[in-house]
Length: 197
Image 1 (cartoon, helix red, strand yellow):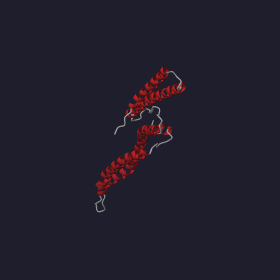
Image 2 (cartoon, rainbow, N blue to C red):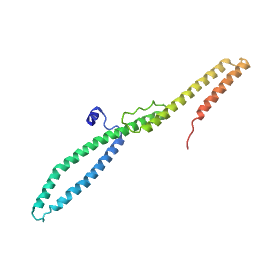
Image 3 (cartoon, rainbow, N blue to C red):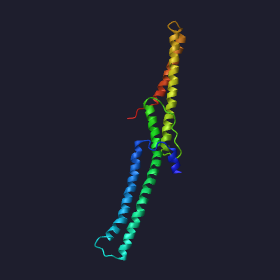
Image 4 (cartoon, rainbow, N blue to C red):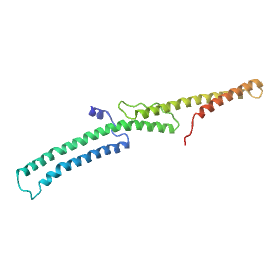
């Protein structure tokens, strides 16, 4: 299953954040293996000191040391490979959503409201992504309403210009009232936004 996932994926590391995450995981494993190796090998090596008398116990310690040497390092290498692969897979589930969030933030910084972010099955940051999607959807709705009101505002201005100075006073007042109402609606929608300090 894990190997199919790695064969299917073309880019194994999609963000520099993954390097730190993978190195952190491997450093924990490396520290554990050093402690384990020292606790296993050092007592046996002290038992094989040069001045020790030849005995059955000495032969048993030497056999144990050789057996550990032949099996321990293979287990270490296999463990490091398995944990590195798992760290890459897990980091994708965190860094993938973070990368999509960053793309959305960059779009908003350029004045574009991005579409909703869709996560892959198994990705983390589901709640944060849902909140970001709610924010962008509300922003999209508010901006759309403001743009419609602004368009209506311009239409009212064009009508008033077309009427000109020769228009009857009543018709001019109706146009001004409609323009004032459109301006008031636009102001209410703009007042929705606040700048936090």
